[in-house]
Length: 518
Image 1 (tube, rainbow, N blue to C red):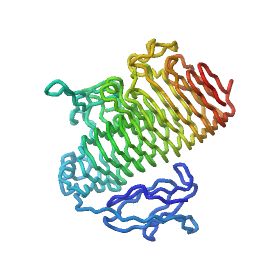
Image 2: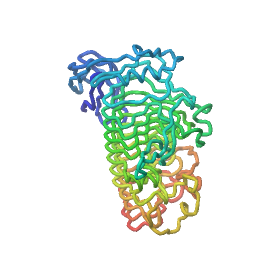
Image 3: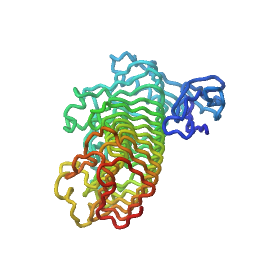
Image 4: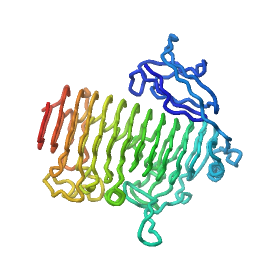
């Protein structure tokens, strides 16, 4: 048992109660701040708010009987001034458009200072962040996005430079440089930003507005709820995000990002409302985040082939832990837009519940030779009611040509500049109970086999009344229930202490495995 300080600022802090639990602690604890109880908790990652600047604090964690299990001490940071958006003209009455008043407070905020959004309902369109900003959404504060497309700025996809030798990319949609509406919250080339609090950012999307004909570009493609482009040192703590028009949090070509204790909620039938999609980003920590939505909870990306070839920027050094993923298509997904590559991704100590797939990798021919996945590690994960816990699909049928012979043929094709590669994948210490469709589905390219898959200390059991489904989104894959492991086109497959109980048919079906260790 250990109490750890994960981050602190002038007004908030994040602690970890490391008692061996995954997302939830093994029992309920009482958290005291300078000797006074502030809350009880059953989660590993916990946020502290309403702290005072330049103040010494001691946090202690106790059991129900008063036994002290650990303490951590810290001093909060300096703060110069607080700018309350009400003083700039915002009313928070849910009627007035408060965008320009909140934007004025943001632009006026000096370094080491805070913009405070107090309790209230603030109707907004796009807000733009700036560097060296601390923004607090107090308890009861809600930013509610307008749904009128005409009220939003548009970002062009690519803008040619004056000398015609270069390009400037602003807009992006599903891995390509395309026109989009500015995010509800947008950061462009900003650094040293902290957004925190118990408030809510509500995209206000529904099937009456942004989710109507979601694949059709009307003026521009749908905005993200929170969009960062080419930013550094950005931290988000505690805030709730909901009803996003499209992807909820979309950091893009950004570095050193921290996401702590967030809640991300979108309806289970909402289109393309991924929770958090780092695209061509590096040094990303996603800790203690709760997801419940209509698409992939986390999708790690790096663009389609144009962006991959032009910028060759992988997503790398991404650490996801102590998160809860519910009701999405995939809990943690890599791809399918991964033309710049993905490497050094670690997912550990997470819980997946009621997702279509658990650990999901999706790619296809045409993503490019820079689309290399390597050092992907999943460990210490609990799954329940996940349809198919493990999926690697190299025939993902996305895009207009996704179902063509070129993409879907299981025959060996020439290796060329469009051929992606999957190198090493490790799955360790994972329990999946009440699975429905299949334990694992691994389908590599015949011309570029998956280099290595290691599965160690894995247990899978099935639901008593399983629902049928397809384990992977590719042509020729039939609906099934309670299947074991399907593995095709892998250079080395290692199964060590893998236990699957109750499958229908063969435990293991293999094809094109060069070296098999069991």
